Structure formats: structure tokens, C-alpha cells
Length: 263
Image (tube, rainbow, N blue to C red; front, side, top):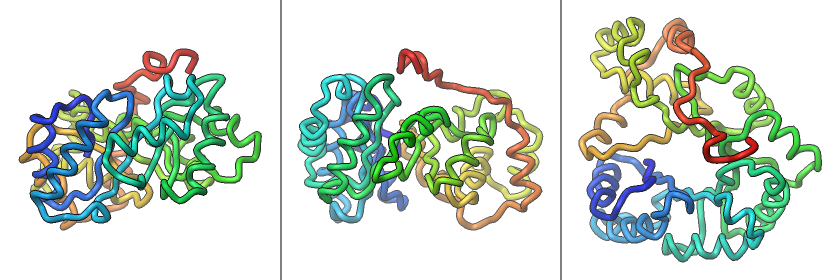
């Protein structure tokens, strides 16, 4: 479940509905400006549902301004305090910020080795960023790359690189907000009719059926979570998976250079 920019009033019913539906992972970031809100909501939703902290997979990210400051361990502690937890399940570097991302990664490795974060990774990395990062032969390779990934952007070369290096894809904007090329797709319409699922459910099934692709989506509608997890009772054929992938247009909904100058 994505949580970016949401207020307490917006997020509580959404997270509660998500946990009730069976979701167990939340995604936030320091630069979303609501990391502490997510911590407050998480505590209250855990109480409301009877779940424990260890039942939930919590991800946050370190942003550009924190990379510039360079005090990565201190920034990590701030995130723990915001989220009211003593460990993170996954900590991501939000951007390959030019001039800083290599040193940031080395400091993230030290925190990973301390045991206070159980997995570390990156976001919005392309092959050239990984190549530069790997040139120093780091002790730990990123375990995850969170990136824009959906049927309109299949990023074939990048995905092949990630698989070769055993890096899992986390897909943000997994439905690409159902822009017209997806919403009006005849391929997706016919699959929706065949399986009696929504187009969004068909796309999410395409994601999870790949095995190394974890979609992260956001909704302000609590009812959407019950629908979006109801994708485990059918299986797309190989030809159908290929047909969905063939919708690729190298289309980007989010442009990296807006958030990461010099990207």
C-alpha cells in the first residue's frame, strides 16, 4: 500500500481496509512529508486490527536532501522515530542523486549490517546508475529497485539487468492510473470479460504472476483494496502475459528529472 502525501484522516480508513482485506505491507518515504503520520496511523490500525508490528512489512526511503546532508545514520534514526518502530523491513534510496548516491549506499550497508534494517535497496535506478554503483564493488548489492513499471513501460533491458543481478522489481504506478491506452485496450477488455475481473485486476495479476515483481499502489477508496487483492483465483496464460506486455510504449507517467536534477 502506498501512503504518499496522505493525511491521518485519509490514511486511517485506507490502511484499516487494506489490512482487513489481507494486505500486510506499507510504503512511505521521508520526502512524502507524512512519514510521522504513517507511523501514527500504523500504531492505531495495529490496535484496531489486533495485528502486531512483526505482522507488517514497513518500507521507507531516504531522500535527496538527506543524502546531501550526509548524516545517513541520523536520518535513519529519524525515520525509525517517525514510524514508531525499532527496525525497518526495507529501506530504499529514493533517487540516484548525482554525486551522493555511492557514498549514501555505503552508509546504508553499515546500517543493514547492524541488523536494524532487514533489507536495503534503491528506487528509480536505471542501468547506468547500477553500473556506476557496482564499479566500487560494494559488499552488498541492492535487493530491490522500486521503479515505474506497468504494461505501457515494460523496461525490457532494465528488467533483464535486474533479473541477472537478483534484484527484485517493486512497481510503482503499477496501473499507470489506467490512462486511456490501458483503460481502452481491447486486449485488456477481452481478458476482463474472460476472467470476470476488472482491467485493474488483470494488470495486477500480470504483475504478480511474473514472480519477481511486487506492485505498490495507492488508493483513497477503501473498497479498492478488497478488489485489488482478489487476483489469486485465476492465472493468465503465457500468450496472455505476452499480449499484455506487448502494450509497451516506453511511456512514463512520472518523469525522473523533475525530482532528481541531473538524473
